[in-house]
Length: 154
Image (cartoon, rainbow, N blue to C red; front, side, top):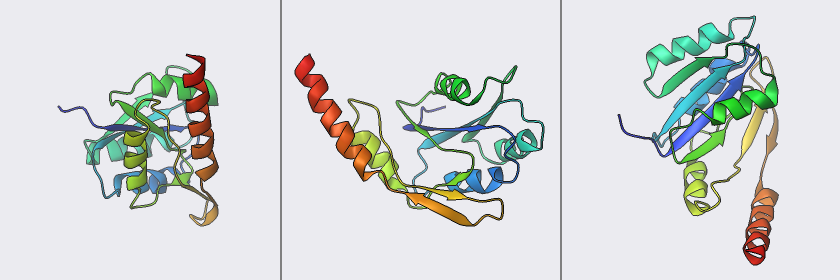
């Protein structure tokens, strides 16, 4: 099995209303050089069943069920420890990724020395309607400034 360029990390806890749409938005990308790692934090609803269904349907999907509930940030750290690709992207379980999100790939290649990148995201509600969109242009400026300042200190 070849190592993908990007590991997309999707952490979830009781997200059965959102998870299918979120996973489908990742799998619908026009670039396919990624793995999707879904880490369930001991959900008590149907979240794990939905994730396992996609794992059976697409070889790029890997599902991990935590031994216990870690909580949001510890679960993200745990998910990051499962990465096999040189780059990672967090994708929230209630967000949709735009279909043509090549910016994710391009950004991660451009910032390969830092291995940090942020891209567009769109939140959805339980009716699968968009509720908010984010654009991380400011984040890129902050990363550039951090990168320059960090190099000056070295």
